[in-house]
Amino acid sequence: MQKIENISLGKNKSNSKTALSYLKRKKKSLPTKYLYDEKGSNLFEKICNTEEYYLTRTEQKILNKYSAEIISYTKVKEFLELGSGSSKKTKILLMNALEQNAFMNYSSLDISEKALKMSFNELESISKKLKINLYKGDFLHDLNNLPSSKNNRLFLFLGSTLGNFDDDTAIKLLKEVEKKMNKNDFFLLGVDKIKDEKVITSAYNDKQGYTKQFNLNILNVINKKYNLNFNQENFNHHALYNQTKSQVEMYLESIRKQNVMLPDDNILSLAEGEKILTEISRKFSDETLSMLLKKSSLRKIKSYSDNKKYFTLYLLKSTKYF
Ligand code: SAH
Ligand code: AVI
View 1 (spheres, rainbow, N blue to C red):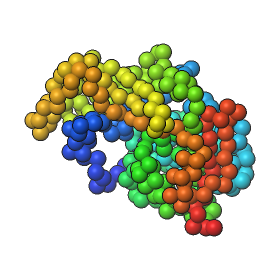
View 2: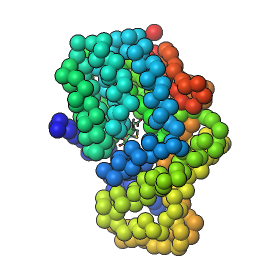
View 3: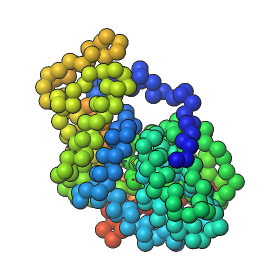
């Protein structure tokens, strides 16, 4: 197994005080990144294979169709992927890149060690020409701790993970990527588009219950991390589409009135029906995405969609080179 390099300097704001302070607010929430421990990463893979979760297979279809074109157009020798997960879709791009190049460098940055291990297992055997680097860290805080490169790079942010962040955070993240981009670098960004509400809602309420397990697992993660005693059985999975905001909101809903002891000896009281927000999953139009790109100094060069226009991959460059 390849060595995993921890690039998190621990200086970010995600300390216990901050994470738990979200629970003390009137509108309670938990940081989305806590969905991804080993179990969460395994469950996410299961979600990707459900009939209802159209995102993964749609993005995969687009990549099957356009990867060769993307590689010959961008002429990149190196990939840097944020939140790679298992890298199954990235493999399609890498296979094409390896056909067109004498060597390839692939770096994955993910907060989940399990995701990095899955990524390595997925890619290690595809070619001796491929060098894999695994970085454990938070893409919201640790991008500057990554090594720079003289190769032409393709930055990758797939799976609509951008949709898990509000405007301010999304722009901050996109800007950080843009700052790292050199003249010949490109950025491939995959986002989920606005579509029929029923299609969206069922993607977050799969029949097999994997999304429910994924959502409830965040309680195990914070129980372990902060020595708390949340009981999964006291919560329901609730995922709805907020049409005004064009986003899925995933909540844990308290089934009954309950108290949970916090590490500072404060008591967290939850009323019956009270909800904790665990994730937003935004759906974009070309216009809302263009607004984010503009504010992040990124320019759209090309875009690739499926026939139903469910999902789009945007190929971007930094505006500083125009
Ligand atoms: N890109 C993959 C995986 C998407 S799931 C795909 O398209 O299928 C989101 C991934 O981002 C997970 O692997 C999760 O561990 C990672 N992740 C979530 N928040 C993160 C953060 N703040 N920093 C780094 N990685 C993060
Ligand atoms: C990673 N992220 C884009 C997924 C999404 O669709 O928001 C995570 C997920 N949450 C529930 N199902 C999948």
